[in-house]
Length: 261
Image (cartoon, rainbow, N blue to C red; front, side, top):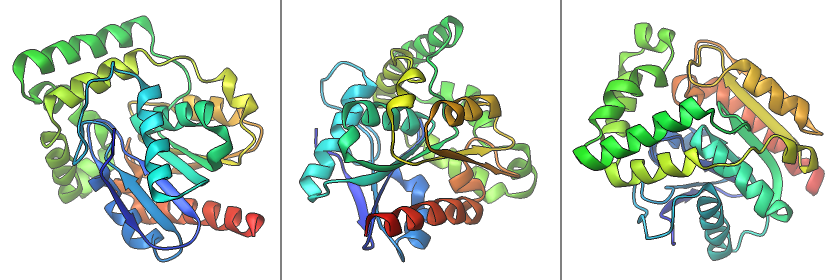
């Protein structure tokens, strides 16, 4: 399934995979800042933004293979692959399925463990409502208030408004498909021990969706990983605190670039 993507800059390829239920539009500040140093590729995952949904069964593996096909189309052999939340699940699947293509990994506000039974049932309930309503009202009601942290809610109304607009733009069919894909994802924690590419784990200190324990569990499971905690940020550090996020990712990718020259 050909993915729509934005591709800017030159240098070490950095592929950034967006959160649910947003699109590559969430990476605006990263394209603007990091493309001065790297080649920044930000795809719309299947069904979101400019990418078609297709007919495949819901699966994070399908989404990961979409990203591999995008790299093929762009002539990119290896890249630093990063993702936030759902994008992190796809990144983990990409590392499992295409490990030889990974220069480094960025895992932001995500986790390697599968859903609990309760969380899985909740995803399926939301997917059914998305399909029945044919609107994203359920996401605006239940997910949007948890996507940004309390500091953003108090001090950065424009950021909250931007995130709300991105959620409103999500196609209900794609959001339902993605919820089913995430509900079915496997446990990725044990497989992290076999990932020898350097990893950067990022976590927003005010995140109410994933926890610092989730982040630390990935750092402990990975052979070569570092953790960055982003203050005054909820679930979306690249949007809520872009300068801090860009500094951490920029340093990580620049160091990788020096080691492969």
